[in-house]
Image (cartoon, rainbow, N blue to C red; front, side):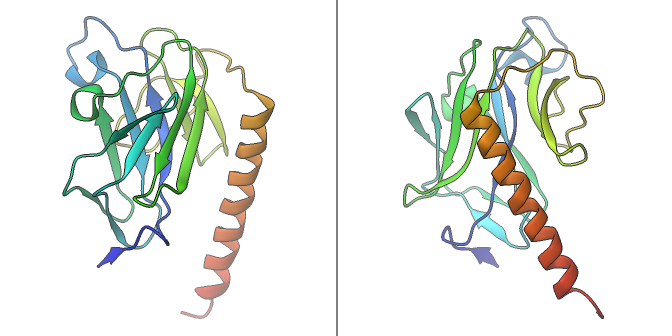
Length: 173
């Protein structure tokens, strides 16, 4: 079954804004944004948008993202133009509600800005498109604005509430 956008919980988990000019991996030669669905239901992405630096781009019609799945949106697919010197990327529901937002810093070629659930923080690391982000090798120190630090604290708080709720609701199963 599908979730309505009113209950949808998707997360922007990785941004790759400075591709490698010559790479055997085609995905690493283009810009992309990774989205993760931590929820229990698939979400229909029809009429959803990515906003980058204020410019809104529609996601491909007819796509859905399953529970626990990652999805990559490349510059070819969504006609996104990520800035090498950093920007804010926002995921908007069909009603225009901000579902997730990430401010990424200036990145060197071949580096990604990613959220790691394991470490509970953002880091600049090697790209891990379509899979769990591991910040075991921080390759560049990020510069985070006060606004983004506040948003990160809020996301950590919400993640803590979700984990506590899951623990309480699954007790005794």
